[in-house]
Length: 416
Image (cartoon, rainbow, N blue to C red):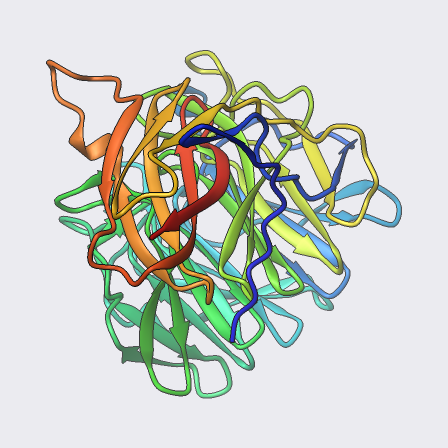
């Protein structure tokens, strides 16, 4: 039985519940580190080998595209340029590491379009070796994650959004197709692994547009399972990484509030999202690079707040730090009538984006992306009716995500 971890304050007056502040947010500290010395860019690759981070490739628009490659040492906070990527400069490639070797491939090459070639980087020799091309052929804007001794590449774009999944065995240098992502085909999603599972979410999805669904891949059964939706606004161009049993997604572009700077933590054990504070001086960021080293995460580069700006700042995130930069979400949500015979109204002082209702076992019994219900006549919904009449009598918990940053309010509902 999954436990539900909600920290909330409930005020009962007449027939409604008022929640003045959202659930308490987990702690974490951001620290600015040495700027990336290779020049600002977006759509770079980033991954970890041992105790070092590696960043390279990318595009700076009219400034040009890159094939340089850099090593970051968190112990000294020093960047060191390594051997250039041996193929053509590109952006929107994928990068990952397995058994102390790095791998970079696919992407978009200026004047040539998408590509399928793959290369292996050895940090000991500072050398590159070409490997077999990506199994599905040409691809850009894909995601990757590693589990055990294999890597996985999924989604992306080639004449249209994709949803296939490919497993790479570096010992055999072989690509094997696995089960397609169960959700919509998409590009510019986020992917990472937590323990023995892979995760893919958000992105620009076929038939949907900006998405916030989140999926877990089980290598043992070769199956995908949908998990709790990402609670920020639906988006693409986001950045993510994982630390321990938790994943992190933030920033990106949502087409509603444009470029974003919010930051979220996913707990794989409870299947719940919590909003955290972003880097304190980062106003917005999209197509940034992210990776983790030991128990800390790193985010940097990407597109800035103005057209053609490519910041070079780099940030370290410590999820265990006791910082003062957590955000407090001042959200007021009322529920009426409460208790109810089944039909309730949720009213917020801010525009409602999504609603989830869970029972006492933590099982989701209702989920609605309210933003999809917006019309030209009613573009900003702050009140929404939910019918729980078919649910058994008892106690339920609501989670309401609102704009502008996907802030979350939680509370209790009683069905009599």
